Image 1 (spheres, rainbow, N blue to C red):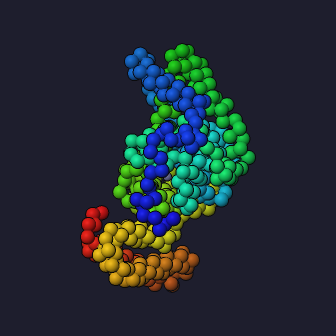
Image 2: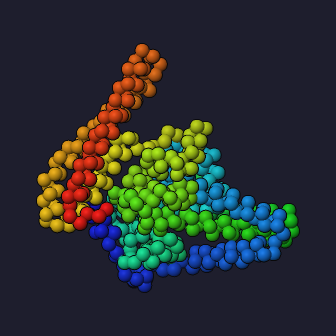
Image 3: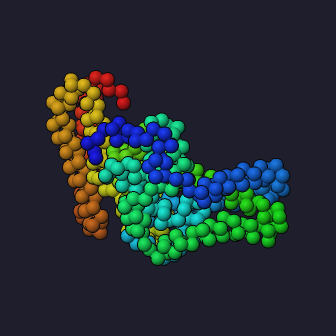
Length: 414
Ligand SMILES: [Zn+2]
Ligand SMILES: [Zn+2]
């Protein structure tokens, strides 16, 4: 799979939407009527709140909407995505399951956790087996950006997809009792939290004005949180700067998406079981969901968290550099000859860098172990500083070698 160049991997497999019908896709009537219905309701109620609602109630509708938007976004990102689909931890406590399944995730209007998770497993599965016709929301099925955007962003959700063995397997993978229960009663839970609850509470507090105001908050937030979540499948697989290694996902460092999921999507595809969404300092800066997961961990509501080691991150960075230069070296016989001549040196520098990273990492671990023993502390701190400097030097040497190779390959433009 990794031998394919990004161009080969992302080549289209369909030319128009109508081909999908021949492959067994069909419109899902309940879903498209529901999605269209909440869009119409959101626009109509939104206009009413701006033009005709009393100002106090318009503010209340706004606060209601923002709360649902944040909670819904967080629930998909934190719970359905990182904790459940990607097993960022092995232990999720019952209160966490209950809060998100019974309440939080319903607000994101993304289908049940079980269904969402199965589809997302298929989305990532493609990075391993390459059968991209199985990726339910691929952004590379069609030859043009418009079709790819429309499909990955919205249309995919309005269709019944042909069922595959892989889908059945993914669907059966998440069998926690609360998740199964939510899947069974998803329709009722949605009816209650998105409609009956705001309607009833609004009417009790403010009669028909209250009824329509809270429904405005609920409908507008439902539409916004849906589109916000869908951008992870569309925007982050189409536009950005740093290309991931295994997928069409790209790091764009700007688009936060649902609370941190949208900006380092390339990093996420290259190390999916990480509780964080991105490597390095920009990952810390752009990922509010990781703070919430760390808070759950501090409260012992979830178990130990998975994350890439510094060595694993460095391996991914090095592999990206090499994949980029390998695909560039294919552009001419001259370039490929040059690459062959310099490949051994570049690979040696990569090895030196990764070994330096490992040494630094093991020293840091050792340092934690001997923190009580003050006699060794200063000595180790000094060794760590030296090891870190060594890592930087080896990394720079590897990057410089790759850059030299880049500049010598004719036609290199990236
Ligand atoms: Zn993705
Ligand atoms: Zn994912």
